[in-house]
Length: 136
Image 1 (cartoon, rainbow, N blue to C red):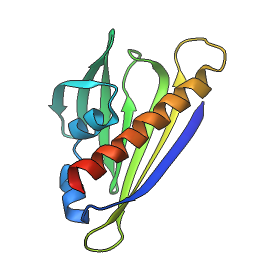
Image 2: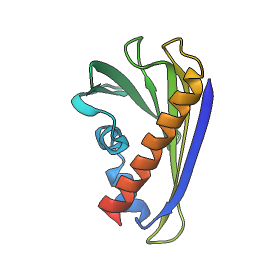
Image 3: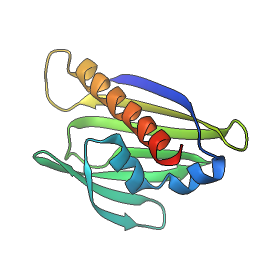
């Protein structure tokens, strides 16, 4: 298993960022999947995402102000994937966003976890780019 972390100060007020950080928006911002369905439950939000040749459920939870999500079940590119997204105000107009993700590739490939981490880092950087574009 590999872990990656990205962080950036974005030109987005804490209130605007908080309003934007919805599960479907996060999935779309990462750029690899399209949201097919959103199921709001009492304890979590399940986002069904699809990409080239696959569909997977992602389970989102709020854990004391941290957005936590994981690939649910065994359908998807990872045998394990979990992500923590945290934001903190810098001032009235800027916020720091930190996203940390741990991944393990489902396919038995040489250097598979390294490849999965490289791909995941790109998705997380893409999410930060989208936040800056849409809120900045």
